[in-house]
Length: 448
Image (cartoon, rainbow, N blue to C red; front, side, top):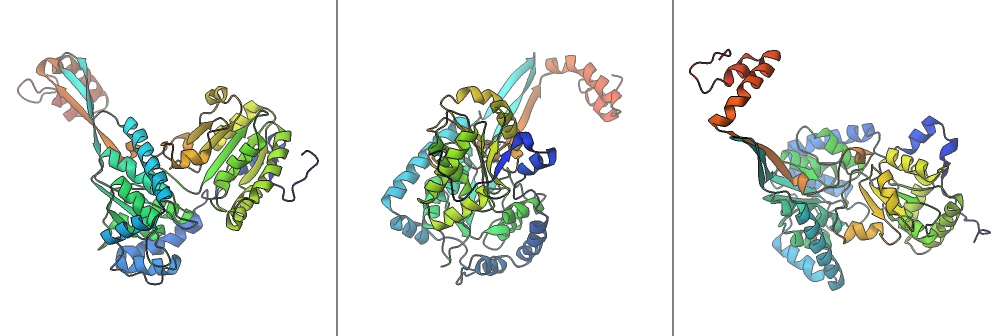
């Protein structure tokens, strides 16, 4: 194999030879600069706010090529849900049922206690209560394919959390319909309201509400840079949830990694689209050479469109191979990048876990394929992108709940806390705060 040479060379970067500026450029994603997209979505948002359903139908016809989209038929009907389920292949429905069961089980395990109280001292109770948010819109993209898995990953945790109003937004098909599997995913999640609208216009619809599409408290789900830009613009109107832009991944591989399996994982996120990011990071140049050959062979088993997408990523400026001088430096680069998906290809992956602090998900070992986690294992595949894995978490039931502090003091519990409270209040200059602790005596004298 060493004598073979690939006909298409992947982008290659040697960390030891990069300047600080060149290294920083490797960390950039396609959504790093949203200024052009923000300028483009602002008139769309204003139009949807002004014209509602008519604007949604116009943009569906324009952007999604849904020629017959009727502003009076944006909502899916019960008959459409039934017909979609009948048309689906039984094998796909079985796979989706398995995924739904595992996703539900995983997120049920996440659910916090409804309320807890701690006795801080005699007569002093403090704790928290967890409640669902009132409503949420789950965004399911469709531009480069149909993604019913996103409907499962967003709507099921919301249902587990007890959100009373859950809606799904997804771009219409060219016939003006909704993808059959997405409707079936809604049904598996217990969602009965789905709307044929996508892009920036869908974000605006649930931010402001239209005649048909309800205003929601929050919107979650991955999307294009246009969707991310709309969420950015509208973040003071609607809670936009964790950032989930174009797909990105790093495959961290040492000298024990299998080249073919490593190549399979490298292509996994690269095939999403030319705006994706995907790197192999390794300390072994020989492995890199063998992975490059394996990628070229695997391209012969992929559709022309997915080859085009993944080739654009892996030969471009946001993908390819990163050669580190040693495995510790490889791990440091991974942490600086903070990828959405991190695959650790090694015969013994567990020791690396302590070194890897920033990633949306970490999949350990040669059998833990990214695609299995994406679809059926149970953990959520809506993960922070754009480096936000440094501070943000995967989508979970916590994104669909809120916490309230609960406290209750008896007269006995109040007494020992009065004096220290007055000390704080006086130092910070709050007279009413100081007076408030005089509740066991007449008057409001803060010297009480």
